[in-house]
Image 1 (cartoon, rainbow, N blue to C red):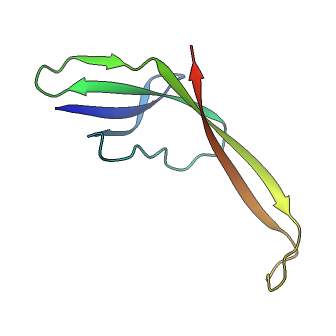
Image 2 (image 1 turned 180 degrees about the vertical axis):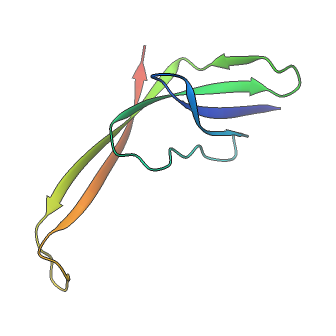
Length: 87
């Protein structure tokens, strides 16, 4: 059985997992743009390999204009975008 772990690509620290492919890998709270890699682990042989694709989650903050029925004049929204990086 294969399981997958999400790691911060800058130092290979574990962020989430290991989980089977049927479970998503969660980044947790982010406040900066981060590149991730995925480590695949075979639970029968304990062999592992880093998958070749990298994933970058871009964090940008933007202020939206006041909307009707809002309690505050401005609302801060974090926009997250994950893109695959081929290296």
